[in-house]
Length: 364
Image 1: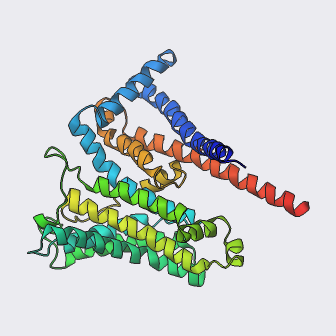
Image 2: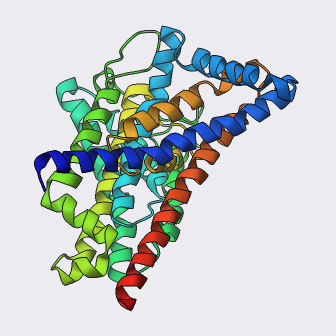
Image 3: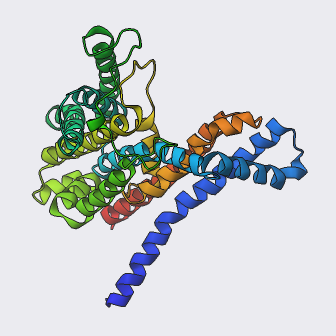
């Protein structure tokens, strides 16, 4: 096969992989418009009017002004981190529901390290990020180890680790000397621990650049290195990989540690760049759970997580503006849900295709 044919085939495969995510977005908007019609009292003949209204409001709430665009980037940044974190686990055939908890322990550890006085920003900011990576990596590595060594279900373990992580951080805030009782939060971190902002009018900061570099690096790791090849191989066919000499247990643990480390980094940069303190959480921040949708829409491609995060970030950013215009903010969750359902059908179709091929090979 010539290089030209290889390039052509690669392009065709890429376009096919983008088809389902694109159709998922179109279908979700098609369904959402009916709810806009119901909320605004439009008749069925005003479908395209409702469609225009939806697009106009989402654009107004997310990118129409400099302030709104920067505020949208505040939502986008953690979604890139959590999307990439979920993508790594998916590539190894794992379902890391615990990205939420790993993100939270990254936040908690950053909030504590950020209180250390007398450090230079050159030392303090990398220290916060490293501690977030370590905390998230440990939190992801625990269920990874249990899965690899004892065969326990990573979904159940990571769900439980989410709650343990949230309540652990809450305990530190509410029951230790690190918390300010009157505010149910930790003190504001040192100036030396705060990431540089793009503008004074928003909390958008250079963690966005860090997130993009992380996505590119993980893409390189997964597709251009032996380590990434082994992780992907275990995800595609663990038994065939083991027959080929690949250590399944090692790669399961590695994938979960990497996934947790990136989620923890996202939590650390969220504290360092946006919140500047850890606050008592009554519920999950949901960046980890939304990251699942980001990874699915991106077809587990780390670079694809960037535009997917922009889409979900824009939807989340515009939810308040939708509500102010008489449209329920829950329409954002509806759009996200339809996207997930439709993208998931692609995986189901692929599963039955592969099963049919295996059956044909056995019968043949």
